[in-house]
Length: 211
Image 1 (tube, rainbow, N blue to C red):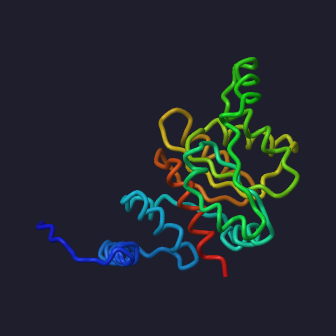
Image 2: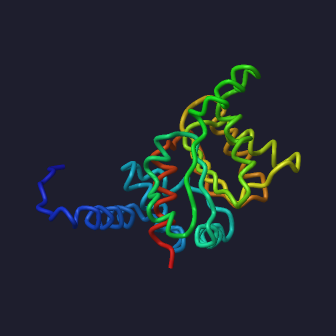
């Protein structure tokens, strides 16, 4: 297949990218539910991976829940500074929300070492003390999802919403399935794929599509 250069104006590149994604989904016979389309397409745009059209999993009503949470000032907690950097904080601040990542905090590193657990585990515990609704955007650490699941099951803490898209091989798929078994609203990518960039892309898709 011959690849021909297209002349696209700088401000039209993203728009053209989404057009190509739409065309290729149609060619593949893939139909994404309308209410999920803007998120899944942004994930594909970020990754150039059409498998996400099959593996992205949404709890019932989660997109409206996510939009309302942000409109009412919810905070976002990530498990990497990369995801924190990628989320559009300017838009979130307009609604009264902040993005946090506690992974590099000295107290988190010290406690994790003492208890011989991951920093992601301690970070989730620290995030549970935030006195407002929290959206968790996990793109790297399955132990973050496992800790959230444990806190939910022990009635210690209930996240407002979980975006569970860690990437990797050890406990990644099992951790995602734990979140799928809860009653907490979720956006999860089944399987091994994901990453901080995917977590940020999902957050941004929601932020860019609030009515």
